[in-house]
Image 1: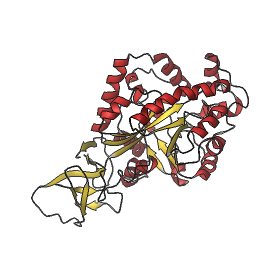
Image 2: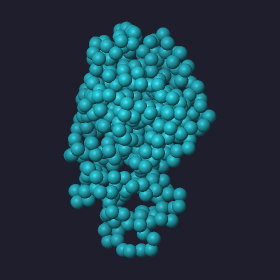
Image 3: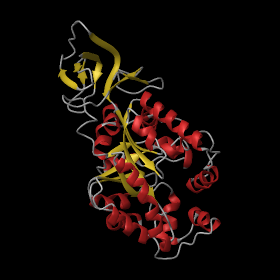
Image 4: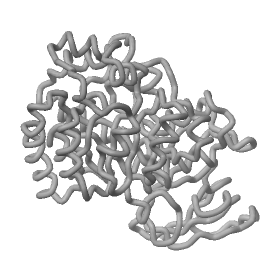
Length: 391
């Protein structure tokens, strides 16, 4: 057994504990939580740490397969420019891709991530995940704008899902985005994903999405024309709310990723679905669009917030703590306790793993992290705040 204490413990099952004590088994299972009301007494084998103990982080959105693109993207002018560079740069060798995924997995582990929702286009990441100490939920992403090839694109994804199933890895077929999935593909996918425990979709990541979907104009339309892709009227969902409410499976949780340009009307409309989680990847949003999601609006509408890092193609690090620092800088009205919930228990619930992760309560194995160099007087992160993985 081990015994941990710190200036504060955020358990997500009650108020912050001042100098409380956590007892764990040798395998990391939480055995007991002791409230000391701040009057901590010395005892044999007690490990006291200077900082704040929190559960392990949950990364609800990344693309491990794109890790080899770290540092390769030039200064961007929006999502359409990012897609251009992404398409031009996807030429890594198999060994380069494998080694970069291993390095990214190691980085996330060191940054305290215990559970990760990862976007897959192939089975390339599965060997890395099978050896990882991080638990992964895989999202097999499908996309295609041509209604006539929708069945073919779905058939191409089937073997990847079968590979995941044979390895006993959770894997759900999901749509990429409203602007990149034709209505016939949405409907084939809805049938295929009818019993999904979790679904995810890139949502309102750029202002140009709405312009393209509603009027067939803007940067995305230009991108499609450059690629020789037609976008006939009626080929896509008429708007984001219609896609969420009518075209995506109603089963399980739905994680809306990015939400950089979500507006009140769209938020109110899609909230009718229920079981919705809103994933924020602020550092990626700043890199691609130089904008941040309307966090005040989302919180004000009662949205369940979760956090992600996106990929190393659009981020310099896979660090949830760095994402929280960015959110705190731009939205200082939110408390550290709130943000930790977004990054832990909310993410665990979104990925359907709340029984194992997200809370420091007896019977769970959430991992234990120490946030060091925090502002303990005001309970805020500092620029120097860092993660130390205790378990």
